[in-house]
Length: 397
Image (cartoon, rainbow, N blue to C red; front, side):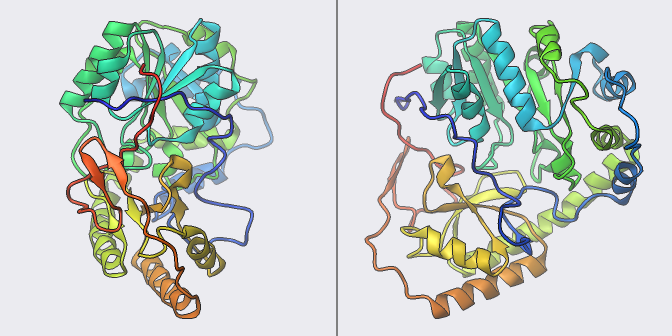
């Protein structure tokens, strides 16, 4: 039986992020999903050589043609954006102006989808998986899918994409696929059918894979039928993309740079395997099944019940983990692949912290509930769960 799911309330769901914060520089950042090897030299050179003395072409004609050729689509389907967050806000506004009143978001999932909708007064509905979506979605909505998913790292298979297609067909909804992490996929290949891709909006955010998250640049690929493309383009501010952003996206579609990016993935796979084993030895209960360069893990006991002191203590020593509480997963963290030296630093910081900090005397964390039954995050077998499922009460879609 699928979970009941409920409206999501509150407008600041997207205010918590990984990466840079207001504190001192992070020395070893497991909270960001950016490529740990940093940018390919040619990309960095292109960004540094960007002409900052002149406005970019406000229409981005050459850039759109270049990206269109790369994807094999018409240039008018390519809409530059200043970043994923800006694209999410603009596309949600376009949907609202077209009469959409409901937005469906994956749970757990990136908070900006819900935040953008809530800011416009739209109804926000969370769904656990595509099968629940197919069972429940009956009214036109804007439907977000993130593949691979943030924060679980899980990717949809053929049956799940089939369920998405069924949900869209029976409800007349519009799909948006966030593919921000597709280029850093460390296992398998995307199962996204071409027919679904052609009918959907797709969000591409190359700065993560290129290791330059400080350069804001992304783009949307509009659906083949042109739905909302003119409106989304009209809603963009003038010069939405800086000169550095243009250089980033131009480099993204360069075959040599994409070859270099792909050649780096085996290194990340090796680092991931080693890091997984070391974190397990440190007491992290990790959740398997993802294909991305990040995954979820339960903190070492007993810090699952009181994560704040541990996370703050590690941060004070220059090591940052991504608290998953903002995803509705207290006691868990999202961890990205990092270089072995960073894992060494995490192990040393964890050892120092636990040696000098009294363990919290708190009751065990309550059991989490999945559609497969209840399990305790201090004991669950990570091989059995590819994602965390959270029960929500309320109206169905």
